[in-house]
Image (cartoon, rainbow, N blue to C red):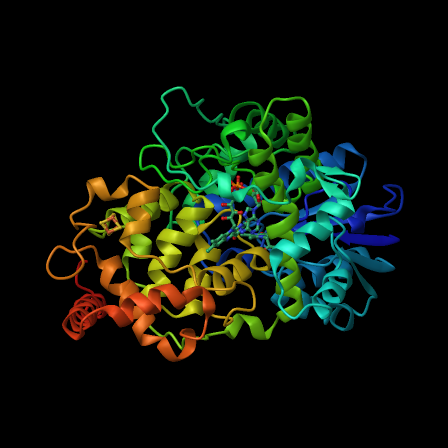
Length: 512
Ligand code: FAD
Ligand code: DLZ
Ligand code: SF4
């Protein structure tokens, strides 16, 4: 064999760099399902099922294209259990002249990969991943010219680079960013179309029972699994999104409704992140919808910014700052995650709803992740590394390159403001304005302190007070600190005491 091409579970793209000059006549493919990848954090059952079924379907696609695929199933008796172990077995069995792999999305895998060549006594070529717009070098060069790594300016570079929503050098509509129009609460809309569910085929059904059997104690459930596990089905879901949801994407982007958790979000991150959908093609489809008059500019610009802006920027930050980034802990927060992150058993309706939906579907939209679970973790001083592991575990679109900067940087401000200019900290007032969660809650969002008061209210002020040294010079927090200073001593003590009582209950594992 000439080349053995090793394809990982989130590299399911026919135009992958490792496949670029592949020849079925003399090259072979290696794919493997391994326990190490399912358990380095205890991934949600649906996430494991999604990846394994998508891998099996992709392997079939490659076989149809004429490739010999060495595919190790999770329950194969001689499965070595790890990427390295499976590679060593394959090299021994097939004696390739060279192994080719596309760089992985996680630092720990790259670190291990760098030792594969010595271990296998075979050259291992690690190729860049061209499924992103900016290379590591481009991002590093951009970052080197900046005092602050503001996403908005990086995003403008990506708009220029791709020509998306551009008229010559100028942004379409005269502005780069239409976010001001995208911060509205939502009303329940009975006419909003239902999401298409993809019925499991025989391959998926096999995988679902394997997951039930081998990962029974992992979070989540597989009943109701309706993810796309083929490129064709993922493309159908993209078309559904563009037709039915993109036009109102902007206006409901920041809103949350208990009865309609997805609103007009795309639910496409799973497919983009494993390589079924090309991010640029997704953006071009959205741009076309604008040009054809099907979707307004605020929706399309907002959507495209998430992909060529935030998504690319997060990846850039991850590779620029790893491995130290993982240990960032600006606030020196130490509290372990309360059990309700795995059970949803809490009286706080906002957290209960979002965590319940997460357990059921392995999905939550951006504002639910940022302003409900993330905001709570930040205010309650939960240890950022543990928070990061939770997000990596529970969401079916989570890989470190995108999850970690979102959690450590954007949500927990654990990097001290490298990524965001101020912490996303909010009291119950924000949650009440942007959602309908508070109507079903035992706590009263209007009550600031004492029995029955919304815990977010005291936690918010206590967070600012606790971290005064670290935050009070932040100009974007001048207003809340001025409000805190104007309060009477008694009011401030009241907030501190309420927060302390709540956190003591949390530490004592009492129901909150
Ligand atoms: P939409 O809201 O419809 O957005 C469209 C697309 O834009 C998404 O599919 C995604 O590809 C991209 N996108 C949007 N926001 C971001 C962002 N902040 N960073 C990167 N890409 C973005 N996204 C992941 O893909 N994996 C993660 O593990 C992940 N963890 C997150 C953790 C936290 C604490 C937060 C605040 C955000 C996280 N995000 C993550 C970003 C975002 O929440 C998800 O991309 C989004 O919810 C996916 O759902 P969607 O496809 O419906 O997205
Ligand atoms: C997440 C995951 C899981 C659960 N299982 C596998 C697997 O069995 N085989 C595989 O190739 N990939 C899997 N993955 C995805 C990898 O964890 C991912 O490729 C690396 O984290 C690099 O991003
Ligand atoms: Fe959440 Fe507070 Fe509203 Fe209850 S009252 S749902 S805890 S914000």
